[in-house]
Length: 474
Ligand SMILES: [Zn+2]
View 1 (tube, rainbow, N blue to C red):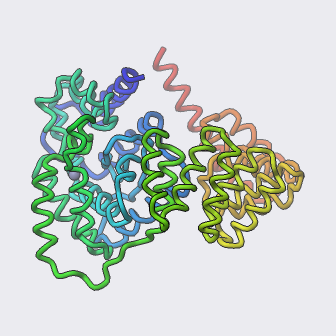
View 2 (cartoon, rainbow, N blue to C red):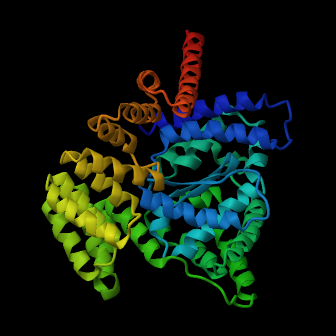
View 3 (cartoon, rainbow, N blue to C red):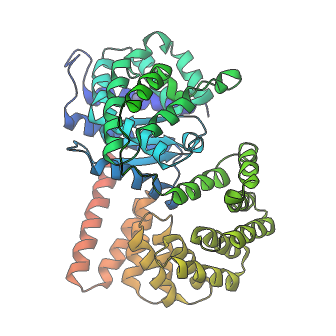
């Protein structure tokens, strides 16, 4: 695995250089906005198949909310912004070309509040706004391809695999070509600090998270955080950042953000994604303090559920709920656990109480819908699932279950439509085509026909492109 990933990325970046053009042309010029967008799309295609992204709506929505709020305060932007959380323990965050911003789980785990998350996001947004990536890429066109691919693999993978890729490509000497320069860092810090404060966060949060990153603790045994190689000069940055922040008058409207939301999201990362070895000390720390004890139980429940120790998970969730009966996300987890155990009545009951607290909780609606589907209440199920998808259309497999619910309800056009969308997202194009065609055959509604014809045109285009690619490969 450690060999394959960098290799795939290498292939991607070789392809990328072909897209951008040979090194001699435009050798030192920056990329145009259109070129950067094109590279961004290419990059995302590779990234989506190679980086393990966290799909959990609670995590993804939270990070996006914070990121988009910073974007909202910008005077202009060339690209729409997208924020992703990578399921990796390495301390890293990076901006890919054209406004795709990635944050590793490990980095969020060492944060203490929303302001620190906002600070790192603001800094990455500042790299994009300053078009540093475009400048680096343009410069990199003169580099040896193998070195470039290996280096980027190292940057994006981080950790051991990344270190190996960097060493193997002899990139050390030329890494400055792709890593941000210290001038880039300073500019991103200066602008990032401005963005952070424009969104009413305290600049002190920036200093706090940078200080943690620059700590010596990792030097003792661990690997150097990938962030320090991609964003150089952390210790100097801490010095000038704290000086700048220190000279400002404290803003009256500084906010701490949604601290409970941040906490719930962080517990999710520790409980559902982090290794038990790393998570347990954190749970013990939370358990010690009465105000975070519920979170310790919640995290333990998530971990037990992942380990399929279902009874222990139920006990832990119940302990958490006894301390904090007002937190819908914990009730949702208990409901889902009951559902997985086949205890459908208990699951329904718990999920309905979650929805009493938060009527628009998409995960609760989704789980309740699946419960009802399982119990043969297809009409009810389709209602819950429709409501869930309206709030969040990225819930995994939701189109599949909607298809099932409509099918059982004999609403066949809707059923085929949702199966079509499900298979399209699975990249199973023939299956998608079949279902869209069935839906088209069964409907008389001109508006539905229009939607279905558009979907079919897209699928057929993708199938044609795939065919051309495979015939070229021969
Ligand atoms: Zn940076």
